[in-house]
Every structure is written in structure tokens, then in C-alpha cells.
Length: 231
Image 1: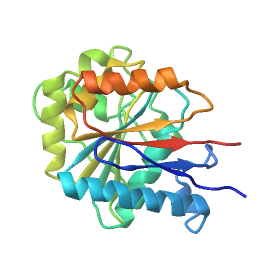
Image 2: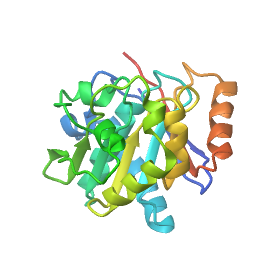
Image 3: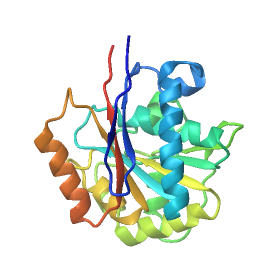
């Protein structure tokens, strides 16, 4: 049988949860609502919702130390269970180079985050509604190999402020923080950061480096989700 193990961690004492799930099912909490994994996500939702309420967090970054740790699946499912609990949630695909979340959900990507960041004036793009419970998706937008130029700190802050006017909670699924400056800018600009860790892929040294990067940019690391993915 599979077990969930808890640890204490995070700047504000958020519990680290150990998850196991099929990486090929992006929204397991929607398609397998009564599964063990869905229940684990609901436990994490309780922890995150506490942090959100206690510290008035409106924008969250989900990132990892390295590519392939399962952060996109975690971000999508976390956004789903938070929407189920009454939040109006915008899930943002902030991986402009690859758009893993957008491709995984097979959404039209003619416009999206890269479009908004590339505008010099305030622009409006309609987000895709993923569920009637209040879950929306802002796609990555047209691919950009020079995404670092788009992720200017002031422009990111302006955009987040604009989005907060329409949503209770905004969750950004970003590239690995150790590999892309995009995620580092987001960590600095958003209210909180959640680090996804798959200890079968990443070393303790790499985890520490990711934590140090978040601290270096003065990000608010509220906790970590340790994900043991299996096939």
C-alpha cells in the first residue's frame, strides 16, 4: 500500500506532503475525485488555504529545483482543489518557452501570458474557464525564446495587480527556479512560493540551491511539496 508522510517545513510552518500520482493525468483531482491522491491534494489545500488567509496571499508561484519534478501537475491539481473550495482561481502557464500546461490541457494558445507581458499598455485577454467551480487558465501565449526580456519585474508586478482585481488567487506554474530567470523574477514579485521536490530526481544540494535562490531574490517560501511520481 502507499502511504503519505508528513514533515514540518516552510517559512510559516506549512506541512510538506509526500504525493504519489500518475504524471500522465494532469487533473487527477477532477477525474479521480475519490482517489487517495485527490484526498492528499485536499489536505494540501487546507495547509495552503491557511497560509493564504493568515498572510493575505493572493499570488503563488509553483516551481522546482530541476525540470521533471512534477510541478505542472501539482500546480494544476492544487488550483483545482482550491477552486472547489470556493476561491476564484486563475492558473497561469508561466513557461513561455515550452507551455507544458497549455499543451497538456490542449488549449488554444494564440494569446496568453507572453502577449500580456509584451504589451506596453494594459491589455485584456479572456482566460479559459476550466470548470464551473471557478477555475480559469491563462495560457503561456506565443512561444518566446527570449522570455527573460518579457519578465521584467515591474511589468510582472503590474500584471499581477491587474489580475488580482478579477481573481481571488493566482497560481503561476513556472520553469525550474535554478534554470530560468523567469521563475526567479516571479518568486520576487509574487506573494508566496511553493517548491515541488522529487527526491528521486533532484539531489539535496540542488534543493538547497533552489531554496537559497528564493531567499536571494527575497521570495517568500511558504512550503514544499515532496512528490514521488510513479509510472
